[in-house]
Image 1 (cartoon, rainbow, N blue to C red):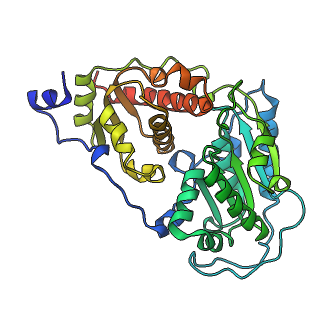
Image 2: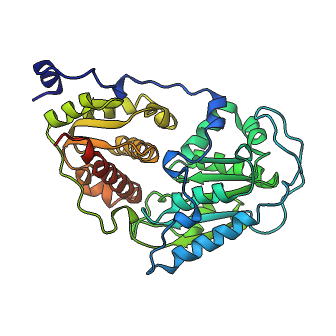
Image 3: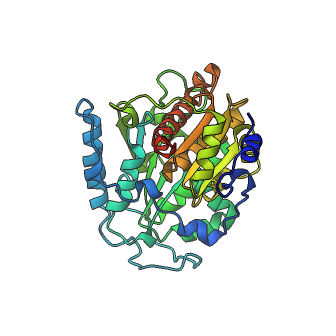
Length: 364
């Protein structure tokens, strides 16, 4: 039965929201103001990270990052205080010798974002002097402000954290590499988490040398930190719930204030019209996302957009209730064995966790 037929057949609550009806536009000043850890990671700290006792690299990572944060407690290279985000920063002396950044490499679900956000929280500086964002959000900031203005905007910061550093687009990679080089020269410390290098097969990981080679000239500024382990999101938890039928998903959407309801194929089409950097704004204020007719993703470009949406839903802790195929069937075998495999498995992991969160929304 179609979603329309269901809504016309029964007296339901007020109509839910729709992602497909949203086309958010985010002004530049908001892009800067929102460079903080997302809601899921707003309260995380190093002492809330639970290392796997069988993976010593996780305990080591906490110690290394704690020390790194403590080392950022001194005055900024310029000795300046807070500046307006649009002001021109005076030239500051080059950063001291030695690594000015850490690079977290590891599989999905080992807690890299948790650790990166904990580093941001632990760094002894007011929030206006620390920035946290994904790679795609950083490239969008450059697009909104221009390269030189972005350098001036971020050069007064003590720390820049980049989650999900992308190596998918050579142009964007070189752009951000140049930006980071300028910021290191201004005394800004860096931290980044990894993503899979396209074409890199094997264990769903890539060597630190690949990342360091791609960010040209910055290798001396990063200390690579490998974090091993299994996906913590499903450690000891029951299997994800099976997909529901269209009627259950639709009725739940109508009964849940602040929920959205969309047909999955139409949502995939809509995502192509919204820049991925705006997916966070696309999901703003939602209490749940309800999807009918979930199908296998038809192509890689669509799949990569869905990965970004899954990340933003996970960041905002928005439950996902769906009918159709289970989430582990979203991506083809070819995709799951290709160069972006780590991203697809992360999306499956995160969507599965959100599906588990949505069980409580369904009327008993």
